[in-house]
Amino acid sequence: MKVVIAPQAFKGNLSAKEAAEAIAHGVNLADPGIRCILAPVADGGDGTVDVLVGTTGGRFFTAQVTGPLGEEVTARWGVMGDGKTAVIEMALVSGLALVPPRRRDPRSATSYGTGQLIRQALQHGYRRIIVGLGGSATNDGGAGMAQALGARFMDSEGRELPLGGSALARVASIDPSALPASLAEAEVIAATDVTNPLCGPTGASQVYGPQKGATPTVVKELDEALGVYADVLDRSMGRQVAHIPGAGAAGGLGAGLIAFAGATLHPGIDLICDAVHFDQRLEGVDLLITGEGRIDASTAFNKAPVGVAKRAKAKGVPVIALAGSLGTGYQAVYEHGITAVIPISDRPMSFRESLSRTRELLSDAADRALRLYLAGRH
Image 1 (cartoon, rainbow, N blue to C red):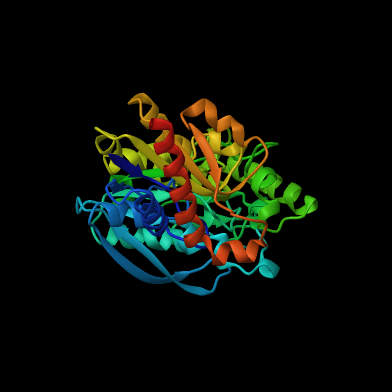
Image 2: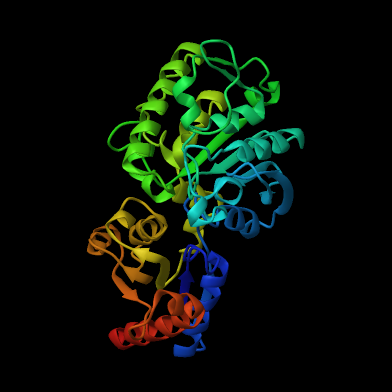
């Protein structure tokens, strides 16, 4: 019997690879004879670099760059096993996890460090760059990223704007003349699991601003600033980005990558599954086990568990999803190839305790799930 194990990272706790190993341990507790095929995945957010670079036998690099608060951080990026494709994960350099809750302020947070990593990849000679969008602390429309690459943002009096999303309310013109020529030669691919436009009721500010520390007043301020920014991008760059699905990903970094790097946006899980030849791993498989920290209605919008489940369903492979917790509307995933959802908690416990026991809980839940699956087969 063969089981493919394809979880994504359990955010802030286990990497996708660590989660897969924990699940495999539980599967083999149920039956040591089962062959486990580990296929950790990501959808553009946490774990994207680990999965794309680690799974393909690539190389990792580290760099000292500007973090979301303007302070220096050590960020990791990598190159896939093909030796040609650089991978940058926005969450690792401009991410919300890098900002203590009390210091979260999307008015001043910047994507500058993400631009620095793109510049490094270009300087190393890479002309195919995947940028994972997700887990951002920012709401600057990718302006900081563009500033790191050489673009200049000026107000109506020709003064250069500071970093941060709120400054975009004063942008009057953009000068892209100092962008590196190598950027125009590069194929930039943005991997995201959201389809939000840049502005409006479903845009970057209104949907994601509150989790980054924005009050209702600040949300309104940032949304209006991105509206001004979108108008100037249209005038200065000839790019109409405001309503493109996914332009609002990562605080609008999707829009910035489209405007300044000519990027194309792709569903993260599909891009990653194709890159690691996921479909081939499903050949002759009896069961797929996936999982993530929380499964709810939003998971059905092609997030990692549903993305892999759709591929398994196409090959007639049943799917079990293990979840750290269940949220409202989690049943929606049953319409997209997931056969059963199993929460991993074994008794009432605090969130802190569940975090400290995630590896153990995953293994135990996988053991229980396999015993039920085997009982059903018999």
